[in-house]
Image 1 (spheres, rainbow, N blue to C red):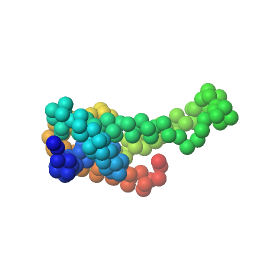
Image 2: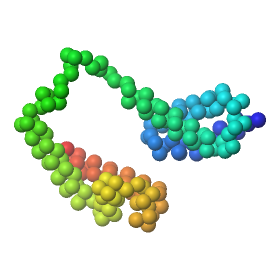
Image 3: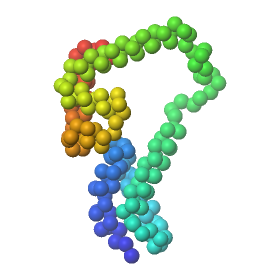
Image 4: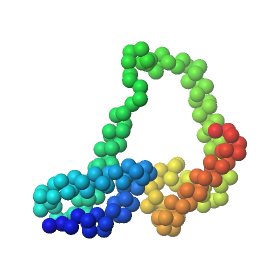
Length: 171
């Protein structure tokens, strides 16, 4: 028989860290962890088939978070009716599309200028993550720093970019 209290306290921090990789919503992660343990307790008689309880918990948490994402994407504040539906080709004419594209291009150029104002390492991490679409683990190896340092550097880079954008109010 599994001691659920001990299992919970031994695994909750690791599960929270794991869940944080999927969502930054702390309350969602906590709720999903709670749901996993409630379901685990409800199905405790079927646990004799589970050989690795930790892997089971991680897989259950990942599935639970995915279920929440799927459920939340189906929620919509506005009901779609024939009266408020307009096909895209009727909604924007060619002139409006060209104006939007020009505006987007201005924003891209402004962001590129802000990135050039960053220190070299911050430019490198922005380039690796957003342009080359590398994962944090890859960036760790490329830059020769640990995972937490990559996260911290990315965070500082984004704060600096936001500050530069706020100063110019171009975006």
